[in-house]
Image (tube, rainbow, N blue to C red; front, side, top):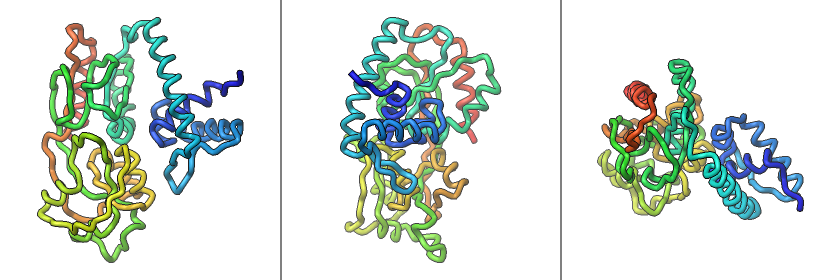
Length: 296
């Protein structure tokens, strides 16, 4: 039996699940270059391409999707069994459950500030696309879009966010800026389509800014919001952007706001504490830090 080294399989599984080398790197604590090299080595060993690389985005090939499903299931089974043997969590660990997009785009650039303020606190971030109610892993504090199912978790506070269109600078000629909202729908509209929509969609946004787009607007759907954002960076269309998750890419020049209009959402983000009767001793410190960061 010939199996690839775990050092290559785990970066591949993470990148396949997230469809992003950079997100896989953040999840595993590696550099994006290291993830890319491990996956390239795996592709050479197998003699097949697992990802199609286009512009700044990556997309699974059929072979990559097949191997990804098998690898994800196998590694999940191993993790589950190890957790059962070792206990659900380490006693000193403070666990923050965070919605995937906020974890990657908003939390990670700020996490060093938390460690600087509380150097003795052992913090672990668990990211997920699913609502908090569906998580099977223990947590102390959780952060997700308001309105998503939260189960028995207790609300700590809510925070505001703004919603506005974003796209690559190359998509719209500079002399056309800023666009009238009605012109936005003349471009491909990138959407995050899931079975239950727990956040603002294009129809709601246009209605909120008093615009009525043409029924002929073209929508391109993705199964995750980070993927829709990466498609926007690659110039494939215009996506709805939340200020807290897009401000970094706007500052770096990867995205622009093609129109002035925005929708203010005063309670868009909710932060929860676990319903556990034995909270982690640093839970209040983490909640206070998140409240401070989200007030900016």
